[in-house]
Image (cartoon, rainbow over all chains, first blue to last red; front, side, top):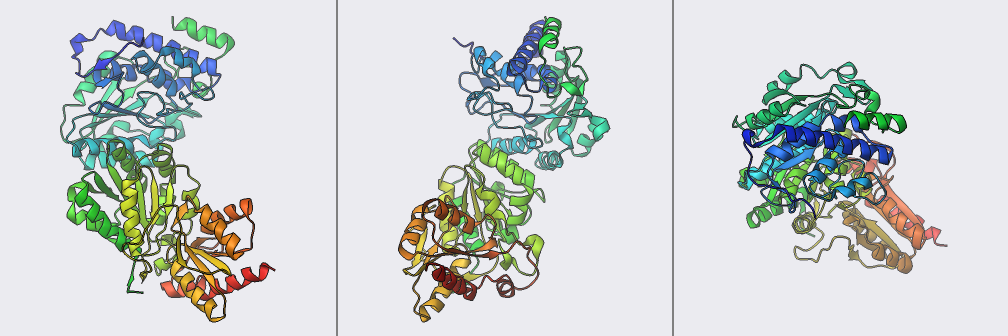
Length: 283
Length: 313
């Protein structure tokens, strides 16, 4: 029997037990390491950095029905950094969209749990994996929501390396120009991309002023601190008439010491001793 | 045959009619709605029209998002800009996600004219038809453009339609039957079959007249749907006429002629001659000068027909 999560009302901060969220984060990190290790491939670094972001969304902020993923009034999430599929699937399973046992099929032949985020998985809104697509799609959904006079919110998680794609900035202009205050982008700013530190490969700084000069309400937080994330998600609703972006300062590979900040764990699965060490650290 | 009208006008008028019937129709533009005729819709339904500026990738992605919330978005620009510039977005956001997005682009082929190579799309059939889930259409005249617009709005899933800037004669009737994937027989004949799309249907009908003067009876098939291609009509033509000419305002590599050849070589190889652009970019000139320059005129098609018939022996 699946645990059913129905969150049709936004919770208030005081109703949230931060310790429980931390325990959930720890469990999700173990799931991620198990998934990529079993698959012997995948992208642990950018999944581990986004754990708290996704938990804050699914546990606290977003309205959805896990037993009815197509519920019309649900808030939407586009995970534009589609390589972070492990964290997305682990979180969706945790919140009851599908049985947790299915996570063992991650990246296996015939499974909907494909290497990059795939909409065959209950709760996934859109196939991603080619970078720089998600924000435009989120804008389209948000325009659709406004046309239908439906007040759902559209969240879009972007990678920091990803925003080197020019298409992200085409979309950023659209969100502001069309006053899409029902769009909230979250940059998982883990400072590392596939072949090295993001700002050595192509500097994206000054990041906050880039977004604000594009007409966005910018909120900067520690992306591993639930208090800050939750407050930021609430603050993102406050300013009317413009979109909001949460720059979540995170650590690539967060929670596994030898992966933290190391680009070599962007797209590699731990095995043998590395796997044992990672799991031990996450206990 | 009545007066000459560009196929883009057929789209522009029909999208307005559809907009009146269905408030889920929305139109997105990359700041070329004057040229694509999407502006007819803008004037009638400003709240459901979005000029996203010169951002083709964003136009396609935004259209996909609108489709996922239950709208029927038409994404419009020049064929070169949307299909080439936003290719990855069409591949992922539209085709891989099987989004209900209709991509309608004007300015296909060399008959774009004086604007020259950068505006003349000669590769859209090839790059669109290799993508799964999408239907690829190029109507022969203004009525076909209108009915195709109507039917693609009613159908589920991705569509690509190329319209023309240049005015060409109306060849079909307003109430003619039209079905995606089913070629329209424009002229009966049993010596050779001319298979064409878009404005090349007109050139093929003229070629058939020239051939008739020499006693050669050419069948003319209007292959308005390039994907899925009408295999049945192609194989019947191979069986009954024994020689084929394909004619398109597009590169020879990968377009309509290639799609026809793929059917023939696998099922019934017969001689095929291909009329199209020979691995070159377009250039400045008026439409008629350019059709001649690239050997896309009725006379070129008639010559190819005779070569194909010769190869039967």
